[in-house]
Length: 200
Image (cartoon, rainbow, N blue to C red):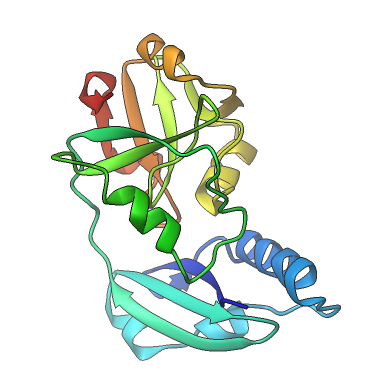
């Protein structure tokens, strides 16, 4: 079976949201590999010299029932100016696999846009690399049925900064902006576009 992946933010030498990463990783290990023990990703991530000297690091932990590899990469926020709506009713990314072939195939449909916004059975889900949050200027709302329940999304829900709701393609026009979020992109980083930049 393909390896699983957890992407962990290391900011100023500290790994963020390890409790949420551990919970998701251990749940996947139980379901997919029958693991009965729990691993602590923090024991595999730090210390690392590369993580200590760069202010923002993308740490990739690859595992099956056991951690197999840890990689450290510098990270810059993406520049996204437009998104293409892509319909994919059968896409399934409940588990964060290293193999992203299905998402890569969908990304090839972006045309002249920078990113895709995936629609599954009429409902807005995620981009190829992030969860999304819509804002009407007052509220911040994330789709309640994402392809992958991301750690940043879960963190923001727990903090009460965003709420979850069913969002159809027709609902998009009720909002002003769409924000991309993932473990490396926070809401306040403002990686966002006006909803008019979402192309049908």
